[in-house]
Amino acid sequence: MGTAWYSLGAATAAGSFEEVGMGTSTRWPGPRGGVWLAPNMRLGRVDTLTARGIDNGSDDGAIGGSTGTSDRAVVEKQQIRAIEQVVDALNQTLRADPDAFGLRQGLIIAGTNLIDVLDDLSETGLAAFGLPLDAPADMRETAIVQELVVRVCGAGATPTDSVIRRAVVRCGRAMLQDDRFARGIENADIEYRMSGVLLCEIYQLFFVHVVEEFIKSVVAAKITLWFPVVQVIDPSGVIADWVASNIVGLIPSPCDETGGAEKEGTSLADLARGLLEETVRRVLGLSTDEMGGS
Image 1: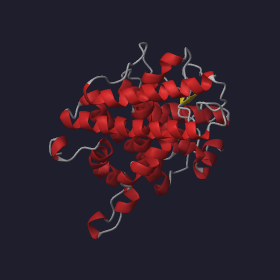
Image 2: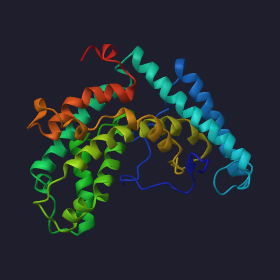
Image 3: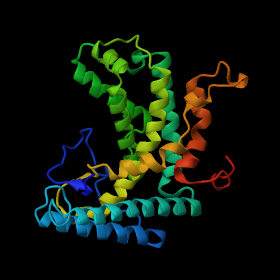
């Protein structure tokens, strides 16, 4: 695993699916003060170490050049600790104010919208998206991701809106990686229906990606002072690996909730709706009481 949070020369075109900025005209400075002092200081330390490595000619962002194994280990350890501190600060902030950043409500709204879209794709199929059937396949792929973003989260300009939007774009990409879904798009098959397995995967991926993108947004707010161009955050996957190890197991799957006579005849989408608020609580580190007993 490499140690750079970002890769140079990776600035992207506005409006592309590779967006990494916060989606606002004014750069988000990230959370400050209080419980955020420790993670911000840690991120500053990582930024300094990584930038020093780039200045020394390392091609992978490691300090001390590409052969500096011990230096890379130091930076990676600092990165992991920074991620832990960011997530801990987020949990503490939300326990003190469950409406902080608009993240809780934003997740509930976007999660509800996402489930509705997945339900449409399962029940109605691609016809629900009104795909441009006479357009080339790659344009249909672009159109379905754009439509997913519009339906789930729209064009809000807050930092949380941008975090959720990037997570939804990644979910759209994941849908296109599914062989049956991709064939449905390629063949303009409006009769295609999303499988239950894919519905459950996308439901879980959404929350995984939201956590990853929030961490990346905090990192981006602290490292871009070193470089004048937009950076791609964490190409080596340190954040993704941490989330996979620590967050994925918290997210329930509707597919695991299908047993029991009381759930007979209940759709996966309805099961997902029933899990939504509990899922939000889990990924944000909130108990039921802290959510107002909902």
